[in-house]
Length: 348
Ligand SMILES: Nc1ncnc2c1ncn2[C@@H]1O[C@H](COP(=O)(O)OP(=O)(O)O)[C@@H](O)[C@H]1O
Ligand SMILES: [Mg+2]
Image (tube, rainbow, N blue to C red):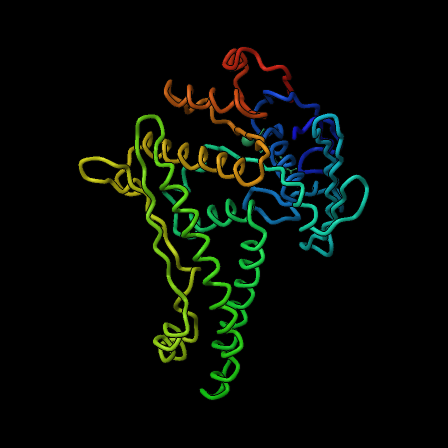
């Protein structure tokens, strides 16, 4: 499947713009703050129904308007498929979303059945390696959710149950009240929490089965914080005393090592270029996972990555570009010759 065009209305800084894309490489060139990243985010939203920045969802809508439309056309061989996401601002900060496939209304789950995938590659993703455990978890949640509906649902149910469980702990009056009310939420956090841990384990296993990139070998260690009936019992009095949940996958961590005489923890001791290599390793595996599980080649979204690349990295990127429909942004117009001339150049 290829993305042939995308039309955005009131999306971020665009009032109304149509972008036609190459089946191979499309280069978006423009000065800072002209909306290059916003176009990639529109593509991401067309595919996943949600943006990729850490901003709140209503910020996707142009601030002068109350609604936004992302209208995309995919080609599946000769078959044209039209996907549309509509965002409507409700009140000051809430967003209502509507999804359409070929003009028929769909739920967000049905919308995601199209199986199209996008892999985003941006310099700030080095924070997957250097950032907090929560940032790492968010990254792995995003990857696994993209290919696994059950995971996505478990994640939502787990977060909801955890919130409710914490609320009970926060406001309970007597221990017997707490015990009674907690038992319901305990069952849910154990059920969904175990599902999350199982799938996180299996994705890290997938990564460890594909450890090599550019002559280097990486390894990821998953450190789950198990949530079982037995552990809930163990932590019972502590949780009642401190009035919050102490265990569960919301406290998981991941460590990444570069193989050597002595394996090196890359978050702590990696050079910038080794850390960047880890991001390549993760992204290459993301591409592979998506392709394996959906049989569709993901679209590659490269956001301003060229300026930071050394020659080795550049070669890796060139290889990825050749294999995938790619939309790349850059501020440098000389980058045009990087990929033996992209077929489509969008200048902002
Ligand atoms: N909801 C919004 N409404 C209008 N403009 C927005 C909105 N969100 C972001 N912008 C603007 O979009 C611009 C940033 O676009 P961006 O895609 O990050 O630029 P680039 O990647 O080319 O540097 C900024 O000027 C920002 O103020
Ligand atoms: Mg940008």
